Length: 175
Image (cartoon, rainbow, N blue to C red; front, side, top):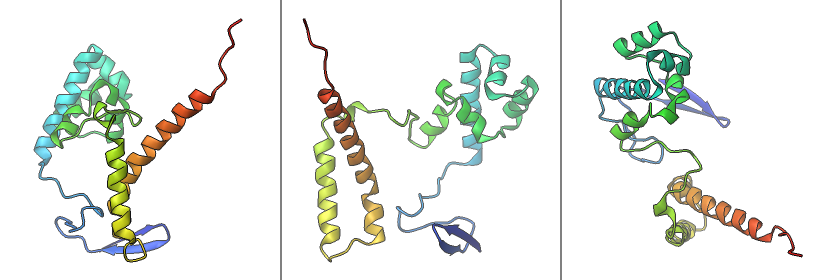
């Protein structure tokens, strides 16, 4: 058993070999990726970064390690995840992300497929909101189900408000 304290609540979980939750909004599903697969792509990413940076010495410096420590990581495959994140811009996480079906981009990045889809996202959120409010209240599961759409709409609104603020800024007057 494991007790987790969060936001003033204590939650006790029964830990088994693998935790599987039926509600995908509470815990992500356990990955079927083995430790060996993860290690292999992690080492592949480190090797690519080593080449991109110009060698083991530069990689070691970027990770704040000695070349011997980097060699140990390459052989044993164990590393502090922070060190991988320290060099993420060089591609150290690309293979791991690809293995899970993701890609690593900066938090503020806007995908070209995001443009023109904002109205569909707003409509989808509105539909979920109307369905959730049908019984007069929005429960936790419904809120969690709306989270991705809420975040996307918030991002869209933030971008629009920034554009509007730019339009309202005083411009220089031509003489």
